[in-house]
Length: 198
Image 1 (cartoon, helix red, strand yellow):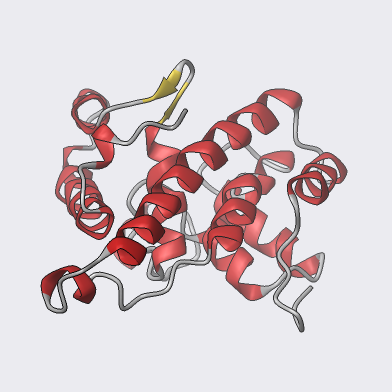
Image 2: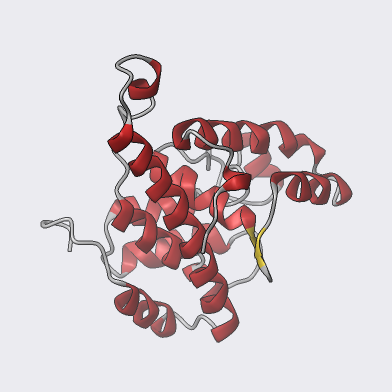
C-alpha cells in the first residue's frame, strides 16, 4: 500500500478492524464517521474545483485533500478499541496500525483523532505518553471532527457538541473544538453544520 499510496478500501478496513477485535457496534460507528468525513472532504474538493476567485477562495485550496486517505482514516481511527475503550485507544490504535505495517499517515490519523486534539500537558494528566496529539494535516482534522460530529442517529451540530463538553466538565476543550470547526468550515466554504451527509 505504502509505495503506490493506495489506501485500504472499505472492505479491507473492515477486515483489519475485525482482525483487531473491534465489535460490530464500533464498526457501525466507524462507518458513520466515514460518511461524515467523506462528505466534508468532498465539499472541500468541490469548492476548490469550482473556485473562480484567484485570491481568498483559492487560498483555502492550497492544501490538497486526499479523499481516500480520509475515508480509510475514518474507518480505522478507532481500531484501538479492539484493545481498550479508554482514552488510550488512540495510542493503542496507532501502535497496532504500525505493527500491522499500515502507512504512517493512517497511524497519525488514529493517534490524533481524539476530540479536537490533546496538548502535551493534558496528555500527561490523562495518563497518555507525554506529547501533543493535535491533528495537523487536513485529513487528520477532518477525521477528528467527523468523529466529534457522529451521533447515534446522524450528524450532530456543533452547538450540541459544545454543550456536551461543558456538561462533562471539559469546557477547556470548547475553544479548540470551535477553532477546528471554523477552520474546516472555511475550507468547505460553508458551515459544516449545513453539510448534508446523505
